[in-house]
Image (cartoon, rainbow, N blue to C red; front, side, top):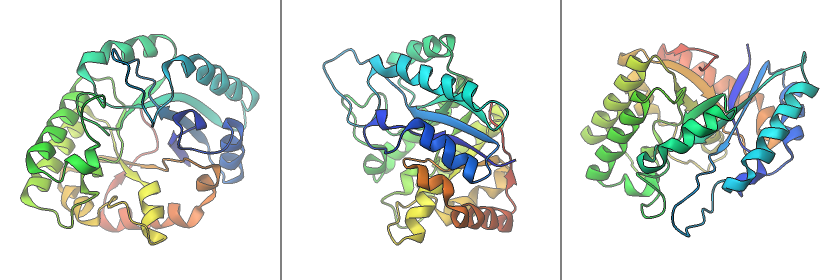
Length: 257
């Protein structure tokens, strides 16, 4: 079954294309399941305005659009309504409310620690070993809540690192152990792979990371992390990801809870 549970929309301010264009691209590429998981609409207590997620007042429009497409394309493709979310303990009640309001799943995309109102982007902050440990501890704590169905780009912290240091291995162990115990998959991120193949590497997916974590025998799922409908049409990237993961002996799945 060909699947993608990591699809963004223009509401996040850094994607292109209409919601329906993503569906049509998925159909053209033979997908059986398309999950929309745009960046969560956190309602911040301060006057901070995020540059990388949908505003809180766009949740209802997002939900209506995805559910309308689910109905329109019923029988052709299964469409699911999700969100990619950080773990912000002070705002965690918002995720429970979103779940009660129809959100079907959450991806853990830990782009910022604690809250982005006052903490830097993970890819930058995790060049420091202490910040890296905090990232891994927070990811493990998030997984333990049972709210999240998948750990998106678990190796995001390798963005600006050149080698898998002891601190990087310790972080990998913490994240993968938590995912293993929770029985949720970790994501092999195809947006990062597409960047690597085009000569603009994001630093993840990191081959050394994925070789190292094989020992945990985690469930692994492909995630396109689509910010453009055309990314759903890139069969070579999909095939290369499968080839790499099979060569390393990873256990692939095609569903999240």
